[in-house]
Structure formats: C-alpha cells, structure tokens
Length: 264
Image (cartoon, rainbow, N blue to C red; front, top):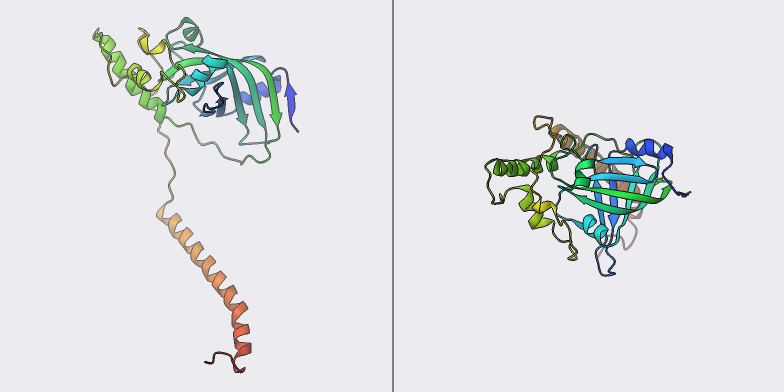
C-alpha cells in the first residue's frame, strides 16, 4: 500500500543514504514537450540536508533536460527503489533550484575537494511530499561497483581547460569542458534555456578523481560458459524431440496396415 508523508521520515533518510542510484523526472509546461527521466548513479552525489530539502551534484552529459525544465517551472520528482533487501519504491516530490558551476551557491555546496569531474550544477530540491509504495515487481540485483567512464572522460576535458588557463590563453580549448557545454548544454531538446553562466565562468575547473583507481570490468561469458550454454541448449532440444517422438510415433504405428493409410 502507498503511504504519503509531508516530509521525509528519518528511517527513509537512512535508507536513502544506502542506495546506489536514483532517477530524476521532469517535464516542460508545453503538452508537446518531452518528458524526461534521467538515471543517476555516481557515488556520493546525493545528499539529504533535512526532512524537507535534498540536493545532488549534477554531472555533465549530452543533454540538459532537468536543468531546463527546473528553470522553466521548478517541478521535479526523484525516485529511489530497493534492488537489495526488502522491496520499496520512494518518490520525492519537490520544487528544484539550479546553482550552476562557478556561482557562489554552487561553491558553497561543492568545494573543489568534493567536486567530481564534469560537475556542472548543484540541483537543490525542496520536498513538499514523500511517497512510498510496495516495489514488489522490482527485480533483485546485486550491486557490483560504480562505473567510471563518465568522470574519466570529463577529467580529460577539464585537464585541457586547466592547461589552457595555465598558459594565460584567452581562447577556449575546443577539447575542454567549457566548449562541450556550449555545444551540448545550452538548450533542451525543446529549445528551453539550459546552462546560462557555467560556460562563461572564469573559474579553473578543479576536481578530485583517482586516475589510478580500478576500472570496472564487465564479466563477459567465457568459452567454457558458452560451451555449457550450447550443451544445455542441445540437451533441451533432444529432450523436446524425444517427447515429440514418444507422443506421435505410437499413433503412426497404430495406423500402419489400415486401408487408405500411406497409400496413393
């Protein structure tokens, strides 16, 4: 059964802190606009201020839908669900505010020692309603680790900006993060304004990232696993053919010799 709260209960705050990912939903006011749903999963990016306010570190990407929608109307819903342990879905309904990279509000929430490569904004959400529901249909998954491809890619872009700033150049490095923001993050797919000030920020992008840290590896099926799967499929096929033969062959034999059977 769904339950509604006017604030986030303390027990759910502790549960939120243990989750590895969340989803952010937003939409423009126009009925022809695109509804957006973004998965977020980088470690230590989501924070609970109190029972009525949360915020997360928004990393760069090829789109800027959430920022654009919040700028237009403020509406945002954040969803968590349990992949491990007892089932649960949690929705946080709120009004969002965007604090872009380079602003005083951004820096007060995300100092350089906690900033992730590619971080472009702090999204603050004031929660006016919280809802839980059963989550009985959500699959059970084991968490392995967080991916690092995105922050590695943006760490390289930021290094280009740092190198350019170090030379005192006034020209923008086309390989850098600022150039990426200008190319990808100024407008939503519906043409709404996205980033407004971050691309023009004079702050040199600084972040914390262990370049020598382990890289997550996908576990691909080995040849032995493939042979096992092939053998299982062969056995299943043989079993099915055997069952078919056991059913049909007696019927065929019972008609052998009867007039009109297998004759022309």
